[in-house]
Length: 369
Image (cartoon, rainbow, N blue to C red; front, side):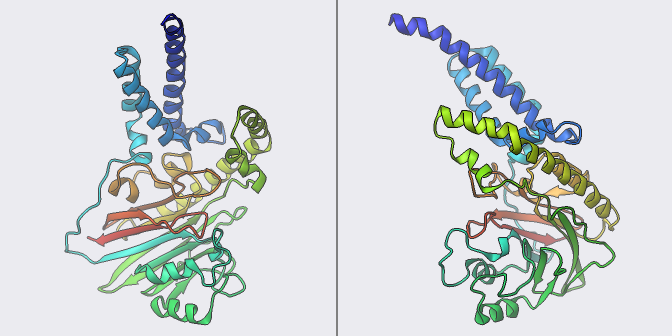
């Protein structure tokens, strides 16, 4: 009993310090996407952790409410309220919509397919990625990290699989010099007037799909610069299992890892500005979907630049809670996005759970207005 009385003040003092740190970190993460990483890159790093920091803040609010400590409970509530707008993208409170029935419905998949390799089942006799596409019933499939549909690139890409795939999706587009491809049930072409922007394997491309009933859809397929971490550097996070390993990981982070993260934030920002300029050149009256591997999270600087004031987030509008689209090395972040504008409406957006690639696919359902 005496020990409890002695420890209690120390415990609550520690919890007050932890709470202030978490609340401040949550605010920095929420608004870090407003700061250009060319000037300061650290806030962009905090953005990655926004959903987790928000959850920790809510846990602390509950703790202080149970402890009847009004000040720190109220401070936590203020933190969440102040961060509501950026949180609405990273931690949405949306729900699936019902189609009105007045317009044509279509399904679109966006997926960094990693050359259709199978990182978890390398000895699988077929090809899970191709099989997933065949079984998806999607109208359009947008693929990043795929140079071409050749056996030299795609493992176990048998003639039978290839025939079935292109029987379902007879139309395809994309330059063999880039890793962005679109296959479709309907005629699709690459927009020749907009040049592909390549910057250290970071870029985007535009496509046009012609649906029945004279419906046109524009697609901006994106694959932005990755963090460029080596396998050893990526293991820095997953190898943390003690205080000693944490210290070692922090030392590594302060070195090459931090520099690579900073460079990635800045390079993505540069390409995002160019992509936004090309989006502004397109007619706002034609439906547009911007999708792909952003390698950055909702409310980040890159995301905010691309989204601008006219694009809507299909995931944020149709889902409740945060998402994870990258599935390796404990980097559980929502770095694949699907934005849109024009006379279409997002009905649903799911994260597929096939794990052949290091990214999960995004499966969007839309309705022409």
